[in-house]
Image (cartoon, rainbow, N blue to C red):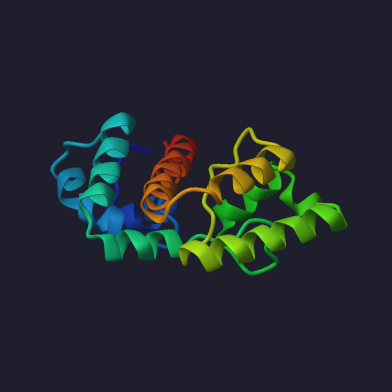
Length: 162
């Protein structure tokens, strides 16, 4: 579906979930979509990325906090369920699940937001290793890393939609 083809409501319904529980990103690019300037998937992806990058840090923090914890049993968006299932996070052993819970708690305590990583193509071991390594980052670096990972997640989601 070319992005400029749908109505505003259809566009937001279709592309609003690209950035987890943050339809403000799709809302922000709507005027350019409506004007026909974002018909190419790459242009839409870049415009959505720029919308996030231009947002105040408080909005970016809300975007980060909209993401579910990894290997969590909490309710999450369908795209997150698919992504985590694809990485095998629904098949953790008791030990792996306990490790994810420890890392989630430690990460949240240090940074005040959930650990974000684009899990596509990663194993549970890869994700746990990244968790452990990134716990050593300072908050500013980790904030930027989380946003970069969110953009990566969004690029995968957009590729699936366009």
